[in-house]
Amino acid sequence: MLPPLRETLVTTERLVLAPPFRADFAEWADVRERSRAHLEPWEPAWPDDVHTKADWGRRLKAWHSSWRNGRAHVFLIRRQHDNRLVGGVSITNVRGWPAQAANLGYWIGAEFEGNGYMREAVGTICAWAFQVLDLWRIEAGTLPTNDRSQRVLAHVGFEREGYAREYLEIAGKREDHILFALVRPAMQR
Image (cartoon, rainbow, N blue to C red; front, side, top):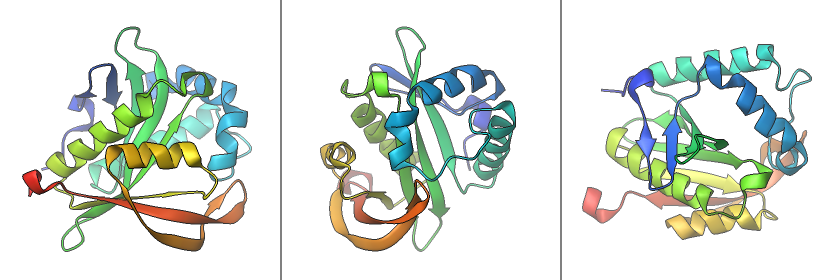
């Protein structure tokens, strides 16, 4: 049984991961807009109306629908001590048996980089996905030049599995990616 959207909260020592809701719009738009130069090179091309209420509404509708049908689980990452939004993490493209696999995505605001928040959030959301979603594999891809992202994955236990040519559209152009995967730990099998 899938966890209810409104009742899902995943916590770490320093962070709270929770699904996004309408009230998160202003802070989400502010963090992402202030981090635009930092984020745009690593993400699909941003729509012309990025960070508007219309953009947020489309995203929320898609995220909530995907949660309800078990295809994706999007979380915002907040610091516990001040409730400040620092980034986001998602488990998407969830595939059931026999694959029991999904894809991992994440982003962090420029001013919060270098504090270990993403390692903490990624490790925690992967453990959550293995336990709650009963996944066997979690897959991730990074641009070959994204060393920071590769270090996050390695720190959490992801292993490099391959290289995919023209794997995803990033910043308006098809880009090669290095592919990584994390397999459910033996103690959770």
